[in-house]
Structures are given as structure tokens and as C-alpha cells.
Length: 434
Image (spheres, rainbow, N blue to C red):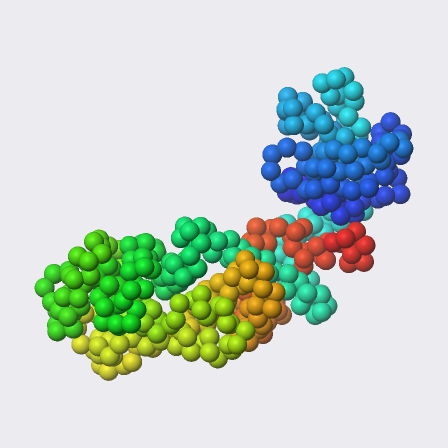
């Protein structure tokens, strides 16, 4: 079954209906000068349309239904927002709609090629994770590349919205906002909530004042994480406790509850203790993020990788948790984790900074960096590879993740550039402005 009137909205928006027979039900000629602005909220479906009816140019709103009687079924006749509708677009004219002033709302019966509707219904009915899987391999590569570029920018703009929220929370302080998002990223999924709480409990102004001393940073992070409570488990644990007591008193800090951290079913190298020690190294080594962004045109993907190529301090070479020695093994951040931070944190942050300050060259640098990073590996990308679409780099993989999560999973085939090409002949879609 089709999703409400989305299909009709799409036909109207891109003028993909039969325009050889455009008259109102009363016989007046219609010329659609502008279909209007699509409204996805309450109120008429299209705002500010311009339509010439019987030689008179009208400006106003357009409402679209399968049947004219849906107007009353949806109670529009009781809603003042619909009193300035200049055209009622329907596929079946089974009722006459009259405004409060007694005048009939002009109605237009929109006709279109039924094959288009059949294609749309087939995609909606497809049980596959990727509804258009049988058709994707037939899309010309140059078109697919164009689609992926649009999807990538869309994904980056969504991430930019999250970054802007962090900026608003920190009064537009770019370093503090990055600090908050950095902690979130170091949760790597299972401990994200705990790291977010830690970021709020351990402000940038506190870590920033002690970034030059690694031991103090470690004491801050482990202390605020609630992992320095009770008797000292060994000499290093005791040193951190002493440092934290001083810092806690100095900044009036309140630690988290230790039970918030998850260790169960994690590989030891992913334990939150190891992630906290690696995070401390980043805070200790990296300059303020604002300095990096302002000179990023001078940096390369290799330098970006080096920024996140972190190794926990020497104590953690022989420990995964406090007080329990383990066989020697340097606790380095893995390559997959490094690229995870680059692709999902650093580059979106750079893109947002460039967008915010209108640095077009820096925006292009962000996109180019994604092209130089390897693609992620997850079930979404394996799924696309099985149907013949293999991500060559992070630019492609981020676009495919956006395609899957924002369109395929929600069956938004009409608004998907791939789905739209399958449903509509590309030539007519282009002519209509799609």
C-alpha cells in the first residue's frame, strides 16, 4: 500500500503528471507557474504556489488528496489554515469542496502514467533490506557517484546539526564543544552514555588547565569516572588518588558512580580503563582543536591519523584494570578505531567549522580527506557489497550508510536519488527539475 499521499506530492512537486490535459473540473485552463514549497508539517501540502486559472494568476496554497471527499474526512473544512487554498489536486473528484465564503475550491484531477505508481508500490512491497536491490546494478556508475556525493553532504549536514547543538551548549566555544563530542566518541558505543556524563562532569576548562601533565589528566579522568575510590590497589593507583584528591578539592569535583562503566562482554582492549588512558593521551598531546582547524589546509590525512594514533601510558602495558597485572602488551588505539574517530568526529567537525565560517576551501578539504580514508566495515556496507555496490573509501561508505538509514530502512524510496531514478524515467525527472 502506498504511503499516504507522498506519491502524489512527489508528482506535483516535480510536475511529473500529465500536463497535456490540465483543466479544472469546471473546464478552466490551468498553468502551473510554480508548484509551491512542499510543507511537511501541519497545514496545506504546498505553500506559495503560483497557478494561472482561466487567465488569472493566483498565488496561495495547494492541497492534494486521492479523493476530493478526503478534504472533509480530514476535517479541513473546520480548519482556517485551508481557507486560502487556491487549488485542490485530486485523482478522483467525488465531492465539491466549498470555502466558508460559499465559493467552490477549484479542483484539478491529476492524471499520470500508472506504470510509475506500479514501480513505487513494488519498491514499498519489497521485503529486502535494500528494496531496490535487483535494480541497483543497472544504474550507470556516473549517476551512482553523483547520488553518493549528495548523500554524503546530507550526512555531514546532519552531523553538523549535532555539533551545532554542542556549540550552543558551550556558548559557541569550539574547543569546549569538541571536548564534549570527543568524550562521546571514545565511548565506542557501549560506554557512550558513561563518557557523555564524564564530559559534563569534567569540563574543558578543567582538563585544559592540566593538559601539560599526563599524570594529572589521568587522575582527573579516572577520578571523575569513579575508579579511584577505596584502598589503593597498587603504587600507580595510589599516585592517581593523591593527585585526584588535590584536584577534586581545587575544582570541587563530583565523581560518577563506578557502576556506570561496562566491562562485561567487552574485549579487554576495549575496557573503559584503556579508553580513558588513551583519551588522556589525546588531551595531553593534541593542541586545542581550534588551532588545528584554522590551519587544516596545511595538514594531510597522514597527520590526521597521527593525531589519533594513541597509546596508553606505560602502566597499562601490563594492565587492563587497576591492580591486576597482565602479560606485556602496549595498549594502542587500533586502526579501525582511529579511522572511526577521524570519519565520525574530526572530519564532520572540520566540515561544520568550514560551513559555519564559510570557508569553501576548508569544506572541500574535509570531503577530500574522506576520499583518502578507507571505508568502514559493518553489516550495512557488507549488505551493499552483496548487491554489487562496494565502497571504495570513507566518502562512499558514509554515503551508503546515509542511504540505508535515512531512506532504505524507512522506505523513503521517492525521496531517495536511487529510488527516484528507478521509479521515474531519468530524462523526464531531469526535465522536471529533479
